[in-house]
Image 1 (cartoon, helix red, strand yellow):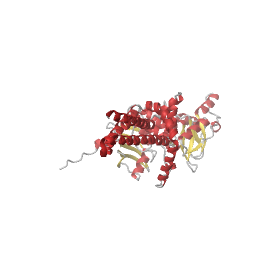
Image 2 (cartoon, one colour):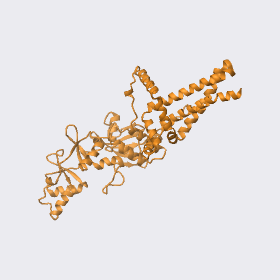
Image 3 (cartoon, one colour):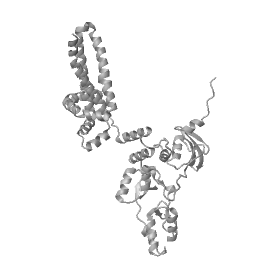
Image 4 (tube, helix red, strand yellow):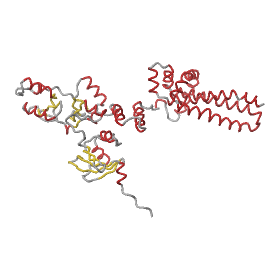
Length: 434
C-alpha cells in the first residue's frame, strides 16, 4: 500500500518541479540585470537574446508564468486529495491542505526564488529558452486574460495607457546612488553620471553667468583702453556694447586683438576693434543644457549670450559652464584652488555667498538641499522664508540652519550655514522630565 502511495505521488512531484521552474523563472527574469543581458546579447549570447525578448513584454511574461504556476499547483493539490482520500477518509481535505502547503511553500516558492535571487543572471540565462516556448504556447490564453483584466480595471478608472513606466534616467540615477551608498561607486563618479543625466532637465538659466557678473567693454573706447580691459578680464572672449551695457554688438576674441597688435608691431593705433569682433549669438534662457551643448558642437563655438522671452539680456553661457555640470568646478590658472565664495569655519559651519548655486553646494559638500525651488542659495532662503530676510535673522529648513550675515538692498549677499549633523549637535538639550 505504501509503495502504491509513493508511486501515486510521482506525478505530484513532477508537477511541483514544474511549479518550482515557473516560480524561480518569474523571480529571475523580473530581477535580471538588463544592462548585462544587453551586453551579453551584443557578444553573441542567444540565451541573453531570449531574456531581452521576454523582459521587453513583462506583462505577457508574468502572465504566462503565473498561469503555468497556478495550473500545476492546483492540479498537484487535486491529485494529492484523490490519492489520500482512501487513506484518511473525511480528513483528506485537511491532510492534503497541510501537506501540499508545506511542499509548495518550501520546494515551489521559497527554494527556487531564493536560488533565483542568489544567482539571478545565471538562472535567467538557463531558463530563458524554455520560458520563451511556454510564453509562445500560452500566448492565446494570456492575451485573453490580459484583455479581461484591463476591462475590469477600466471599470475603476484605470486604463492601460495611464500606466507609467519607470524612466530610464531615474533608474540609472537610483542604481548609481545605491551603489554609492554601498561603497561601490565613488562620490565623484556618482556626481559625473548624475551631471550627464541632468543636462536634459537643467536649462541655461540655471547655470548661466548672470548679467550682474558679466564683464563687457564699451566698443567706443580707444583701442588701447579696450586692449587693457581685455587683458585685465582674464577671459578668452569679451562682449562689446554700445550706448548701454545691455546692447551687445559683438564678441571680441583675445587672440584676434592680440594678433592685430602683433601685426602692427605692438601698436594698437588704427585697429578697428569692431571689425575684429564676431557677431553675437543670442540663445533663450529656457533652452535645455543638452540642446545647448549640441548647438555649441554644431556651430563650433564656446560662447553665447542669454536673453529672456522679451529679448532682454540676462547673462552668458559658455561650453565650460556646461561641462562643469558634469565634471564639477574646473579652475583655471587664474583661480584659487579653494572657492572664495564657500569657506569652512573651524566650528564646522560654512560662510557662503548668496550667489552660489544650490546645485554646486550639493555637489561640492555632498549636501541634499532642494534644487527645484531656486537656483542660488539666497534664492532658496527667500523662497522658504516667503520674505526677504534682514541681516541677523536665522532660519531652519530641511535640517540645515541659515543665518543671514549681509544684505544689500533686496539681495542676500552672505550667509552662514550649519549642516544637519552640526545643527543637531548645537541644538539645546531638552530639560529632564520630572
